[in-house]
Image 1 (cartoon, helix red, strand yellow):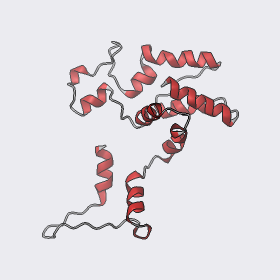
Image 2 (tube, helix red, strand yellow):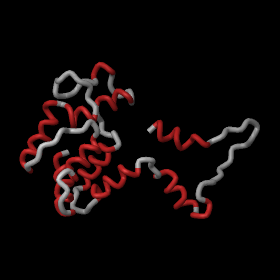
Image 3 (tube, rainbow, N blue to C red):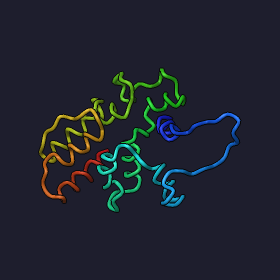
Image 4 (cartoon, rainbow, N blue to C red):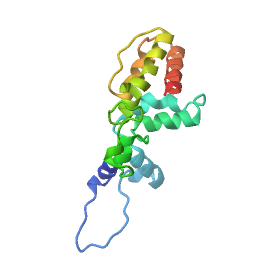
Length: 165
């Protein structure tokens, strides 16, 4: 979040001996509210947004959608994030499974022997084998688009991925 704030404030120029004033410059023709919304919600990673379009589908429970959205942006309360925010000490950042690795989003969902075994069981159940990528969103894309097929099949695989998460 600090990096996002820095990116937003990158163009701010502080001037000595000049009074503070509010001035809105981006998208002057679009209006203040729409321009402001677009400015603050603009993401460099458009690919991520298109991948997660189905998260907000009416058939996906709201709490699942929020969890997947937070997962995709590394905003879950994993121990590495809690250490980064100074909520817990650096000595308490090890995985809850007791495997000895640092508990991060990538580790919990993709690499921890205890929790990542779920993906192998799900893939066995639906009948295909894959190697898990190192990135959560790459995992989602691979899982839901690997077999190709119809739009209905991709939607089913996406919903299955959401439920598994």
